Image (cartoon, rainbow, N blue to C red; front, side, top):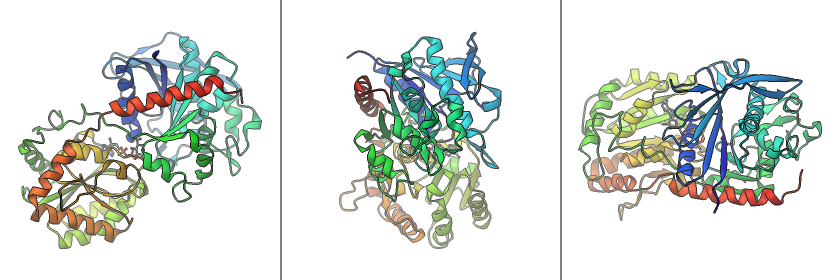
Length: 493
Ligand code: ADP
Ligand code: GLC
């Protein structure tokens, strides 16, 4: 079959700007698709905090982006994603993207996020025209890119770009991007689109919903999450739209970057290890204990956390369970994350109150994230909702069985430990409550101290799993072809 031209329009991409797992996906899937022979390119905003390389080049031609009543001028920087096969373009505009934060600062979400990301969506499409490169498929990611499919179905439908199919991936339905009606005018989309079966939701513009209505095909990042979001409990108010589009929605599990996350060759670790020889893992444990001020004890069970501190991640359950666990179990905790100030404060308190047993680093630190995955015995992930989750996959690959809530992608990636057969890759619990988490940490702890052979099998089971992007990249290709076929027969909206 003929190779496809695929454009990723994304608000984050590793290794240039990352808030969460969306960046990992945007950095890893395009090279996997390019390796299958496709012409893949990517476009992302040039935030003030972007990590730029010395080899970046500014395109000579300025980019005139038509939004609102005027043309805004942007500069386009060009580089390639690691691996060299995927050109990446970054849109620079000081007014919209000069600030360092991607979505929100200490005061909350930026008040002009609608304008920023509609500008970005139009800029991405204007760039295609400028490059004279018309994609077969435009792959959009979350609410920030919701107006790309809208523009292609309306204002740009009769231009050469209008034939491009769109695939819209939901990474997290919780964040939808509500905006004032001004967003429609700013996008230069007909005012008549401000209606419930297009971009409107309860009197406001909803950028996520706009994408869900208008994209040719929809995906989300795990099969279980694809089912959960079609229910009132998991739909965040959009289950109706998702059921309406249900025939066009599929769940495809994320892969992980198995080169960056490889316990056998990880530049962040002093000692590497494999499933056959875990000696290096013990060395990483000592390094982790030293790094976070934990007592250097090779025999104690260490539980690690690397996470955004947000309600979605259920870390309030850990905060509630923590004193009970520490008072009754022989364990240490190694925590890394930031977000909710209340949780940051509780975990800092725990570190002060249980010296040598709780180590906390508040912030974003990729190197420490690797060390926690490698040096911990278990990885704690009590998510209330988890569209896919990458950290549990990293944990399994590093021989660190997850203790996780059975939700979304955690169900699809973690096999429940079976004591009788030593099958499985982790410990799952159902209820989003502190006692359920407490009991499951207790189960992991008992396995650690009483059943070392079973624990070794569990570690090895996880390390043997294939979490590479290859199978998922092939599934995305099927969706792209499905979208291209549907677009070629779709009437103009
Ligand atoms: P989400 O995208 O919901 O935050 P994921 O599990 O999909 O959850 O991805 C989180 C990504 O962000 C992982 O690559 C994880 O290692 C990384 N990460 C999260 N918090 C931190 C942190 N404080 N420091 C470094 N990396 C982090
Ligand atoms: C979101 C989700 C997370 C998922 C990531 C990448 O941030 O919260 O579960 O792994 O996107 O798709």
